[in-house]
Image (cartoon, rainbow, N blue to C red; front, top):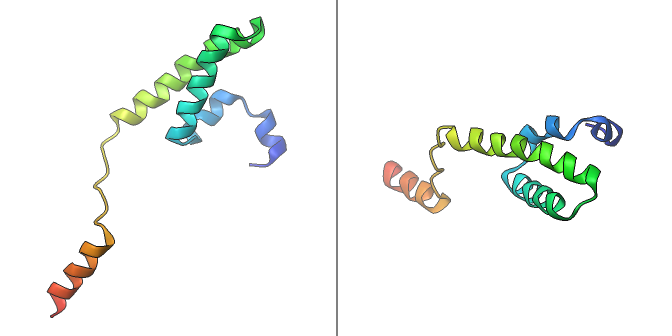
Length: 83
């Protein structure tokens, strides 16, 4: 996505591609703007918070992927297997 395209993409459309950390930061900033922003910022922040919350809930409902095996255990498994 080019910088120009990103500037023209509505924030709500970008949320699914954001990292969990980005969503936490965005949610905190939106909550701050609801409390202390100008009227247009309050409206925009109020509109985006439910979208952020829905994405966080969607991710929380996804099945958890199996944790990767730490590299030292993989090396040990190879040694045990092949000796």
